[in-house]
Length: 61
Image (cartoon, rainbow, N blue to C red):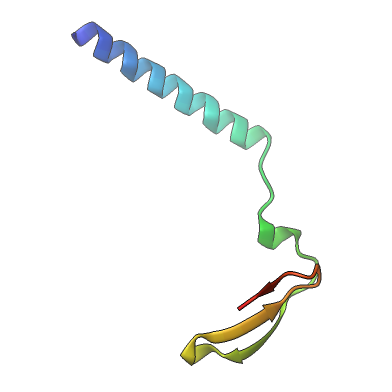
């Protein structure tokens, strides 16, 4: 029982290290970083009613 827990702990640690290493070598760009222009937003932020139009055609309310 203790041996299997120790093996599981080592496997999780190894997988975590491998995943971290892969992320550092090949970072993913974030959606906000891909936008070349800021969105055009109109509305009233205190009430929560805001509509934003992005240059690529996406619209969010």
